[in-house]
Length: 274
Image (cartoon, rainbow, N blue to C red; front, side, top):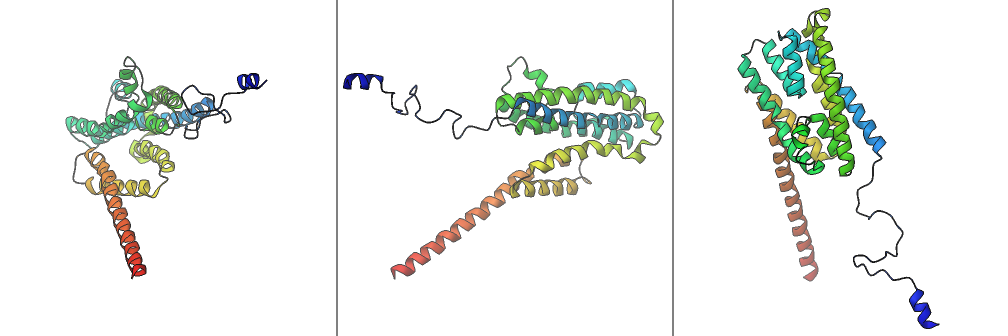
């Protein structure tokens, strides 16, 4: 009887690979929380639709700068990075040299390369898909992707946001460019501020910690200070220096606090010993 009981008793959990866990089934304690696919799609559609509709503002602004309908649509189809597009047509509307305007737009678009370094790790797309996915690496798709808890959700968020935004942005660009004449003076509407305003609305909820808020504030100050003296796009790139600057200063502050605490502890210990 004893031998039969030993043979039929459930195995104990040893912690080894392949062993049966004695605890309740479920995800590991350190596993990221799962987000339903429907919730990811809903969030991605919200961002894609909200930002995609602002392509109308670009179409109107670009038409007011003197570009043809074909040139305007080509910019949205092949460049597809709203801030750079607005920078280009804004410089042209102000009477700037086309090459200077293009250089400023290029420098402003360089930020997407840094986004790509991060997203390539999160998404891990096959090599055949990466050139196509790179065309959708912009502010909004990056914001949606990095907010997801796992790779599956990140891929869904990136794809839905990119597809929705690309289709809507190009359609509304066409509509805006064709309807620019009906609006009259496009500068009076202030439509060139629509895209930056939408991006700030997406960014603000992500600034949760003090470090993030301070970094954003320093970046804004750097950009505004350098804007009058540097070409378009360069102040935005240099404002990225806010991140290492804030981290360095906060690191020094923490090390100073730790040193002061250690010194105080040593003094107290010395007083007790005496």
